[in-house]
Image 1 (tube, helix red, strand yellow):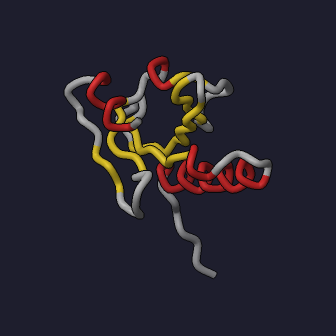
Image 2 (cartoon, one colour):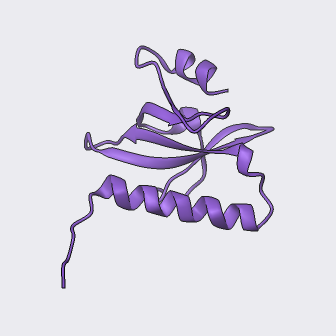
Amino acid sequence: MSLSVRSSSERSEDYQLLKRKLLVEAGLPRRAMRMTVVIDHIDEGHAVLTVRTDAGALILDNKVDAVLPWHEVKYEFIKRESARSAEWLFLEREGRTEMIAMAR
């Protein structure tokens, strides 16, 4: 039997994919959710789920017990799924204002 060790970013991605599946089954539109890659507080890659709402972009994160507005999350945003294709959008590192402009 072979055991593989999965990185924390792979585990967080699996968690976010499952979360997105369950939210779609509960009736949330798939197009409102985007997988997002961040660098966390210990400088490791981490996946979170960004949900676009009328109240703004919210971050669902398995490391935090609360759903937070994107601007309250203390991560560096790297890339997120594109709304138009099966590609990734790389987010600007120079400022969060530029990043959110690209993300909307």
